[in-house]
Image 1 (cartoon, rainbow, N blue to C red):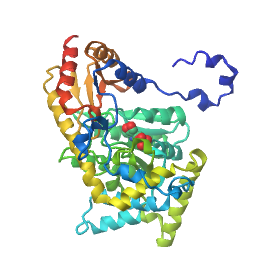
Image 2 (cartoon, protein in one colour):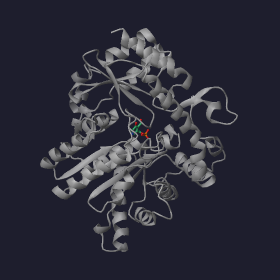
Image 3 (cartoon, helix red, strand yellow):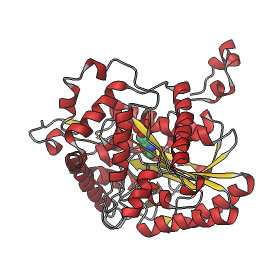
Image 4 (spheres, rainbow, N blue to C red):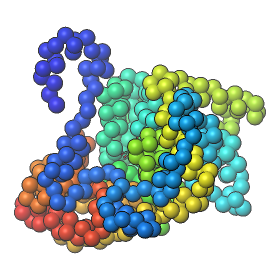
Amino acid sequence: MEFKIIKKTPLYKAFSELGKRIVLPDGIFYWSGRAKKEAELIGTIGAAFGYENDFIDGGRSEWVPCYLEDIKNYTQNLEITDVVPYASIAGLPEIREVWKKWIVKKSFYDENTDKEKINKLKKYITTPLITSGVTNGIFLTCAMFLNHNDYIISPNKRWGNYDNIITKFLNAKIKSFDFFKNNKFSIQGLRDSIIEISDVQEKIVLIFNFPNNPTGYVPTWEEAENIIEVLREAQNSTGKTIVVLVDDAYEPYVYKDEVMNRSIFYNLQQLDQNIIPIKLDGITKELLMYGGRIGFVTMGLKPKWVKNDDELEILKSEINNKLEGVNRSTISNCNHLYQAITYKIFTEKGMDKIISTREKVRLLLKARYEKINAELTKIDSPDISIDPNSGGFFLFVNINPKKIKASEFADYLLRKYKVGVIPIEKEDANINGIRIAYCSIDLKQIPEFIKRINSALNDF
Ligand SMILES: Cc1ncc(COP(=O)(O)O)c(C=O)c1O
């Protein structure tokens, strides 16, 4: 949008710097809007869809957003007190406690062999604060750590909304590095960025997102260990505090055995150094409730910060107060109804049952992930490459920019082949490619989807 008219009005002159800076970027909305109208095969929608009878026993043969079977039961017979009153600023206490237990469950630590780790996890994390979706958790934590012009480090391929929150809203800066080198996480890129930022800033702030949007990348255990080693080295050599925002929006959707099956938050939380992980997760994808807008912010604490358990409790309540301050001054508090539904699912159904019913959706997505990767290997072109991917909802196809610009390719794909994808093009960050949201493409359509992409590539 060019804002031609508004800029001439007194309204614009009266805007704050933020009011002048902020925009709704049209990339994803533009391409998904066009795909809805023009495409036969749509790979733009970042929400899991399927035929209801593929993931619900006795379901219909309709194409609907994937959901957990029991959601319907919990939306009936809710007490008026579960719907009408304000929820507390930090969220309903009972749900915060349940989510803390859920975080422990998601660590997959073994009760027998990992007892010490479990105890450290339970004791040295804050009680999750409830935010309005993961987006709001990202905003809140970035606002807590980034002043105007401060840097946060991130791989170059990332969820586009980070740029909006960080650069447009907060007027801070992103230090990008190339995500991959030789099809592996670029450890050198990470190390160089940390060195560069530690020269100009008293703290080092990073944001990671695995499984990643838009690439689907999940680190192998070895890659994760290398990432952690770089952080450890940097902390030891600079003495500077490192804050790691861990965006776990797609946490449960991992499809390969060799990669990490849990968030990197857990490894970081166990470290004794001042490497502070903050977990950002939510019901959006984990419980398949996109419209629920319930997210959680959970901070990992270090034993050496306090002298005893009393101090630890005081520290937790002080942190909580600060986070509540941001909630109060932005959203005030979150939607009560969905907090109540979340609580009911956990208490009436239980964690194991949630995982087992969700497994149908995970397996549906896993089959698509395997199929689309297999089909992509059939494209014999030196001008494309697929980023390493093992989870989440998407994958990313890099296109040689000398052959064609991603947006031109997406436009051509849509017009000639009726296929919708999201192009991502950032010359200064070495990105030219298309994101395919296989989470919303039926398995049977995948071969045709890739065949059309192949044909389009051959046209140039
Ligand atoms: C990487 C990533 N983080 C966060 C979000 C936002 O999650 P929510 O809908 O809970 O705000 C998304 C949604 O697309 C995402 O892709």
